[in-house]
Image (tube, rainbow, N blue to C red):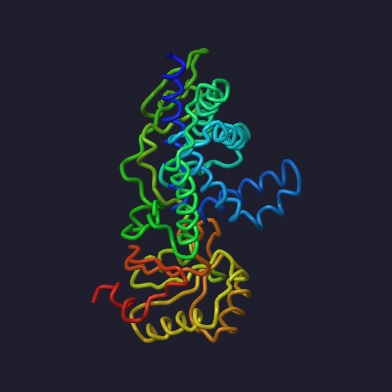
Amino acid sequence: MIIKTILYIARLLVGGLFVFSGLIKVNDPVGTSIKMEEYFDVFATDISPLFEHLKAISLPIAVILVILEVALGIMILVGWKVRTGVYLLLLMILFFTFLTFYSAYFDKVTDCGCFGDAIKLTPWESFYKDLVLLVLITFMVIFKKQLPEKHTAFGKWLTLGSFVISLILAIVAIRNLPFIDFRAFKEGVNIPQAMEPSANLEYSYLMRKEGQIVEFDQYPTDESYEFVEMNLLNPEALPKISDFAIWNDNGDHTEEMLSGKKLLILSPSIQKVDLSLAQMEKISSLINAFQGSDVQVALVAASSEDEMRQFLRDNGLQIGHYMADATVVKTIIRSNPGLVFLESGTVLGKYHFRNTPDPETAQGLFSP
């Protein structure tokens, strides 16, 4: 009876957590693929150069992982082929535990992306979470014969349906933008404000004197104390955005881009931009509609100025071009290129290149 109770609780916790985690990542599979690329970069350097080749298929890998999370979680919850499901979950959690341990121990990838951008965990928090799941799943494997094996049509079609629906949602999110934006640059955010602390940062100071460690809330003026370390007491007050910067060969243009009305055409890699003629024409029409207005249009890319100039020449565009960090651009928008409308640094709208708005809709985003 006790074993069955523990198994029931384990099924609810493991199945529920996998479904929750999977659905958050189905919302933004491109974000998961970016995280996979980070891991492959690290493994290519630390383990084998073969991992470098996996970066090209990081998006399909990400999609497979996130829809499997949802489907396997449903399998465990409804009990359909549950014994097969726990073995598959064991393989998956072993893989995840390895990733989070490697991140935590070697301080390689500072955010595992376990819950996408919705819930941020430190590498060690992610590892301990995976350890708990590993224990629960191992327990289910050991006592698999006592798991309820339900071969019902309901369980079968719910599992298969969750797989298919998750796949469809992932494809829609890839071809457009995430359904829910959990990132710091979501619509409505004022970037300059998000770059400032939300409150005064408070620190504690550990000092050593005569072999004893003493803690102060202000740095002591007594020079006989030896500094040991400084700890932030309210990390929740740190700026939500800390790495936003735009520049070119003439200098920094961050402040300029965060003032007035702007349409930024963002690209994490200008060389990888692949637009159809119709898509390029829509973007060109939008740019032309703002010519001579108070809206400044600019190309911002994680590419060289020469590459951006060539792109603008090839497409007959005459707009300013600036550089930005690739990670920041990918964080702002999951599209290459993507369109971001700003007014006084506030994000008014974000569009995938497949959904470029018409000039009238775009002009309506700005204040009169």
